Length: 279
Image (cartoon, rainbow, N blue to C red; front, side):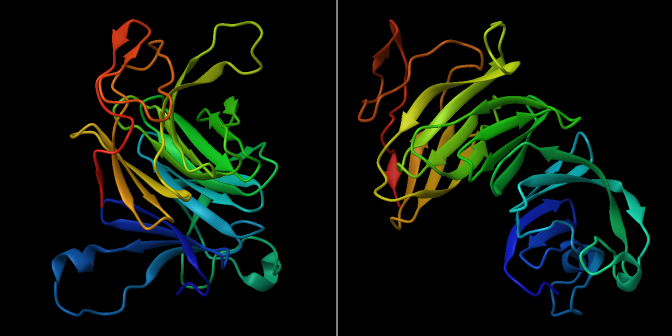
């Protein structure tokens, strides 16, 4: 049903949400796919929001706590959609060709909030369940934190120019950021009690992983194994030791090339900053 590149996908139980350069957000009921392993009828979307954004849609995420879907776009914004609130179809000729509408025979979802502040394409949006906040990354070189009401809480400009990948440490809520310098950096995010800070939350870099020879495009955290996995344009997958200290604890940055079990700040930090394995 999409008519251009599909750029984001998130699973919510037996429901799938997709976004595309065709400016649509689509929701799919995959119940039949779990019940019949044979070749069944073509799956059709149940909900469609046409012209959901004013420019290419680049990412989608889901918050189980808020029951909201978030979509990020090249229009520099993020929109939240209430998963529990359907809207009726609206004729395109009534809404106007540039306005958001729901096609005939479909249902939509109510837009319940926006995240505004980025000054370039918003390339990634994620829900940080540990801290109950949204995290975004943009071509404006910033990663930002937002509360459930859409108020910005924090911001960081990581070294390495453009952000190429974003992920969340599922154990502690750390923010994992890869940039064009081919590095993966781990940031602890925590309330900032300093009166000099512009934002109530701060990013503190606690770990840096170096080894790829080209940009990292995907990051995955496996909490059971306490590992991060990165995928790069250098055609490799690399497995790294996850940052092991609880959030909020002070720690020095592990410099590139540091070995397993190196000493930092008088305390031994186990786990290599180089790869466990290259796949």
